[in-house]
Image 1: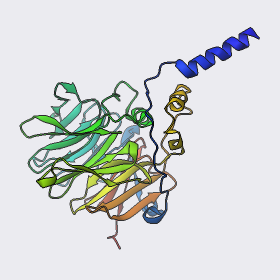
Image 2 (image 1 turned 135 degrees about the vertical axis):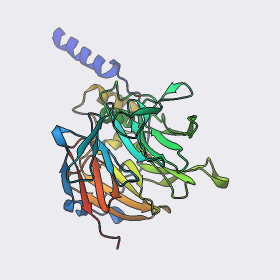
Image 3 (image 1 turned 60 degrees about the vertical axis):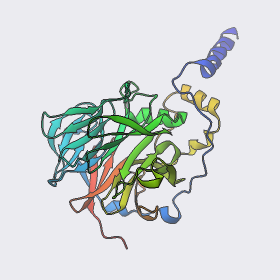
Image 4 (image 1 turned 120 degrees about the vertical axis):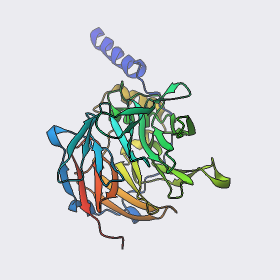
Amino acid sequence: MRIVLALLAAALGYLLFWPVPVEPIAYDPPTAPGFAGPYAENRDLDAAELVMMPDGELGPEDLAELPDGSIYTTSLSGNLYRIDGAAPRLADRLGGRPLGLKAGPDGALYIADSFRGILRWSGPGTLEVVADSIGGAPVIYANQLDVARDGTVYFSNSSDRFDPETMGGTKPTSILTIWEQSDSGYVARIRPDGTAEKLAEGFVYTNGIALSPDEDFLLINETGRARVHRLWLKGDRAGRREVFLDNLPGYPDNLEAQGDGTYWLAFASPRVPSEKLMPYPALRKLIWRLGPLVRPAPIRRGMLMQFDGQGNILRTLQDPDGRLGVTTGGRIAAGRLYVMTLESPWFARMPLAPRP
């Protein structure tokens, strides 16, 4: 009996006091809208062709189309692939974990690398660091970026608390950050002269960003609160931040400006039932101690949403069976819609009819 009591006491002590990295913050999320109204379920992504990554590669997170028409993606292992042909072709070995990609006005490819900061690539063997710190503090979780016409690079840093290079990768680090609800995410810019500065802070897992066509505002995905912000960059409202889209049906990942005043937003997952535990920090900390099997995880269900600069939802394209979940990005390039994924051995592409 004493042994049983001792074991029970040890188990209780573990559940209550064992140190874990997460320090949950109370948050009472709004009720998710579900797949109704403008988000009504459809199977439009069923028509997409799956394109396998070569050599067992996984995780084509994002894509970029360069001025010469070439299209690139990266992999979980840090390789760069040209994907505008029938099958992806290895272009270079970058290392790290590249996430967001964007073409610059100089014809180079700019990369948000979650391990190394902001990088620039203009051909095999040319990889260089654009910025890996701001004000002496390292950029530990660069996620997505956009590049202005004058060469200014805007980028998101998902967390200033948890480093994906030391926490097991970007997926477990994103789950940890959102479960904690710490607001250490920020957006920053790097001017053409190399100076870097933070523009806005206090986000729960900053993710996709995109400039408006006139570059007068920046849209910012806050994954941990299922919403999109608008940060004004020019004019009388410069520096002002406002919620642009709120209480989305899923957790927004990458955000791509299509160039015609519309944007593509990818949902990494629908909202998860464990959101009901967000008001209870102590319980969330206890659950984290129980291990990966009971911790929250993304729900595999593909979904893209197209909206305009006034916040009007133009259409959603969905994959209820989860072939394309965890969905990380979407964009029309060379006349086809590309759909990117976090950890699958494929991405997808399809012709897309004009909006009704």
